[in-house]
Length: 400
Image 1 (cartoon, rainbow, N blue to C red):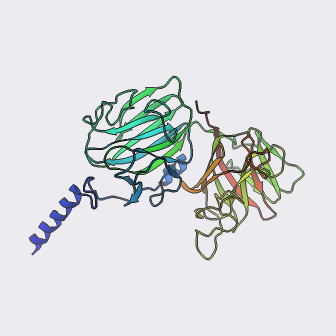
Image 2 (cartoon, helix red, strand yellow; image 1 turned 45 degrees about the vertical axis):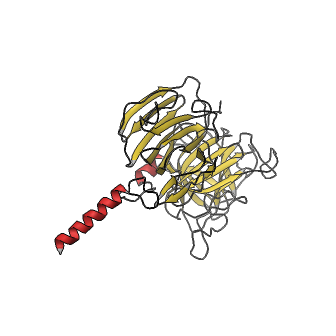
Image 3 (cartoon, rainbow, N blue to C red; image 1 turned 30 degrees about the vertical axis):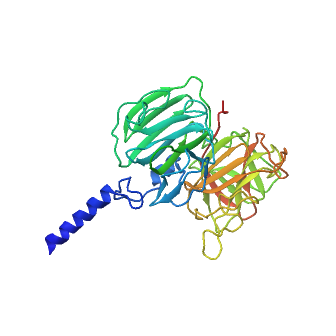
């Protein structure tokens, strides 16, 4: 009996390895938990572009059957084109797992437009294809440079991409395969997943912004402006953290940012305290900018029902889809703002994705403000007691 059961188990495992239910074209493999960030990745500034369950933060540029199955974004049929991020990025590291059928020709598009003219105009295409399907096989930039030969099979593989200004470096399963430089880089763009030929899957899509600049020196409040006639008190702790107590009040950067990435860590020293990070703010005006809310309360014990907008929501515009952070615990926050679009990640999980479709106006309370503005940390009221650390930002390079 035992030998019979062992034979049946081995036969079942063989079937799972050689076939994928429904399509029969991509090998199935046992998996550890996917689409998550480690504590080390969070500390380093990584965010998830795919939450493993939804296509929140993505758009389709063609009629393909993009869907999610078993924690992976998948396409098997339909019109050629891209599934692309709603946010644009400039300089970054990108990690992405992919799995392709034998006849697949696909790719990961960097700094792309939604519908690029070609692989060499309006994008950079890092190919996913066998040598039989393309003269620029996996590990190559299509139309630009061939990479070193890599294994081509139907198992999961990982791209690790660094895009910094005009320099691109790519690793395949931890091994360097290509380095290339563009003398006239595009500057910024979306990240796209291509449906071209054959079945393709993607998971563990993670990004870390690069070339960020520190906003607080850990010693004093140089580089910031305090409103002295307000109640809030601002200080730098012995650990180099910026502390805000009491309110109302605000402290704002002397530098101004228009299309930017911001990252930092926040500690709410209380229960359901209210604060926010304002951006594209009118310099010198009190709390006059777009506000990324800080409020970790939620209703009826459900994190999908945030109180007062929820941490990471765009206050009075779009509530957070989930309250991720907890009071009295450090949490990570990333804000990406470009053009009329803004998005926020909390602990690496995207909680908001909003586009300001109002008429242009220099005052963001009245309409779309695209002009540069300050970043403000808010002291909301007398209960305010918050800490901020590792604050950094970068103005994104314009698209060329």
